[in-house]
Length: 209
Image: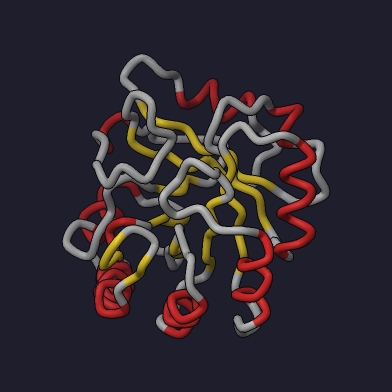
């Protein structure tokens, strides 16, 4: 089994980003949606990224942003990947110089295969839990049985993941990567090193199942 990649999202502090990297996370995410309790400014992101070791992917998370906001934050922050959580069209997502992943909140009536085909130029498709009025970060799990067997894009599993369920989640869905935020927090935007460590251990355990 190919090792599962891990992104720790909702980073707001340098020490949390360093903990994630040192414990084996492949990517860290920064939320540029002003309504989020995990919102961070591009200047703060740049400061955090400058402290990171090499080969850690830095991801900016957006919800229906303006092109100018994406350009400003990605350049000033020094990002390497964009993640769109709103109703952004493929044309919108593809206009920037950086690669992107498209998030979708899973519902029973949504054709994920067709959705992936529409965003065929994305680097991956992130599946999150649908909650009315919330673009993500709810801490709730969706029904993994709704995930099709074959998607045309690499699957990034999100939504309610934590140290207790991550091994089972990977065993059942076989994703390319997993994305966690609230499941490894002491408080919103404040990560817990022990929870990150336990989460990473759960990922490694799943690879032997």
